[in-house]
Image (cartoon, rainbow, N blue to C red; front, side):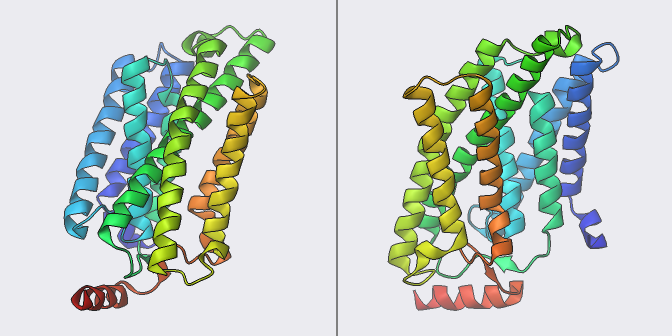
Length: 294
């Protein structure tokens, strides 16, 4: 990693998420040593600072901060933590942060890892379609991240019951019934948003010709469809055949791996969707020229 990354203000956000992870997990496993007060305060401080950083990037970009891959990962992690905060306040799910903040920490580290990359937004992105495509898609990703978290919590609690481990972790987690219900609620909320984001994205790509006439063959587009079909199958299993429990939880974890691969992994397959491999200066000149022609 470039040493310049160490001077990035987002490093502080990442460290706060790491401390939140340590304290949340510590409070779940050793509540006598890790106070509940800090387990509540550290995540709030991290999210507020993260929010301020997103606002700063928004002002700098003049639009939602997704002009490059670095900003996109920061925005996604902010959506994930924001949806978590909302769900935690609304449903009061115990110990949810112990499973969520390690994910937020990994996403933050990934953001720092891609800082300075040459993948930037193409000049054909219009601001309207950028917002219309990205906002529902990222909120859908955030909700589906919660399905992953609830699934891991479900399997953890199920293991406690199976092996009769009735310690702090067992008492700190919700019941299997509540976790199964929360999995369903998160999936029911995230899937329509994922669908809307993909439909609007497909509409924009087809009529803007951003990826050419064969836009549907781009690896990111293909993986987006595969991910959507997987979640559609999960919903069918839940509603159509009333499948519950560990099987759905396991499939949800697989589905989340597909989400991560669709978002980040497809660039290793040469995906051109969303970003182009240009220098920041070249991108700035191209975008300025594109806007002048408009």
